[in-house]
Amino acid sequence: MSRQPTSERFLAALELPVGARQSTRIAKRILADQAAANSLERRLIEQGLDDVVWAGVLKPTTIAVPAYLDETRDWGEIAIITLSVRDSIDPARVASLLHKAIPYPLLLVADTKSGLQISCAHVRRAINNESKRVVSRPLVATIPGSPLVERFLAAWALPSMPATNMAILYEAFVTRLESWHASSVTGVWNHSDDSEAVTKRRESLFKLSILSAEVAVLRKKAGTARSIRDRVALNEKVQVYLQQLEAVKRQI
Image (cartoon, rainbow, N blue to C red; front, top):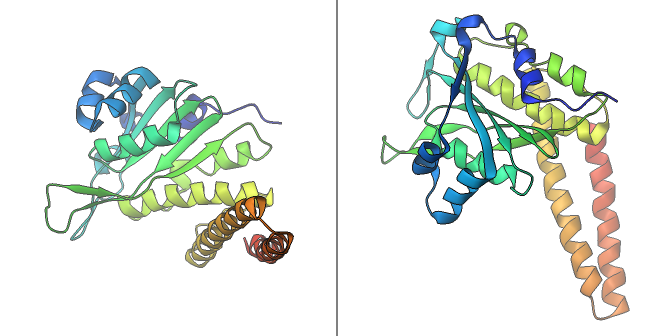
């Protein structure tokens, strides 16, 4: 089994040009001032994180990829941030806070107790207020030690990614995280940037998440059912959903 990847290994896999590399430490107090909406979120940042480093900046002048601008999105720059999350903290909560706080499309790379965590989130300007930003729910992937790690890392070399403009490059980041989620289901790394393959994989992962949630709800209901008849009926529904799950897995 491959050793557990770290943020340093991931940054090396990106093959960043020299001009795109940075190593600027971000003060947690300043980050908390910008990101925290309440005292709980402030403690999460100030007590839950160790080093937070601005590790790279991707923009036309550093990676020779054109910016992209439309009515709601500004892909002039992508920031790469690395951090260490302490064991008692939920790294997904941290990711959500930082994606909202840092005013750039963000590739967030965190060292956590469960393994390397990588997240992306699409950002757009609010329709009624251009000074505000709306951030989609971050797509988070945790990368433990695995036989698939080397192939996953190899897919992140910037020179081999689709990069017609910065928006397409960021979408390539997202699709690689989706491919990791797919590989956790299939046990096989089978990434493609082909638009049809991306759409099919994304739809299958969405169906998988919906069906998995339904199974969890039904199992919980079955566990608290008052009658044997109700329990049997719920378990039969579970079996139907499990069959559908297997069918979706074969499509990924």
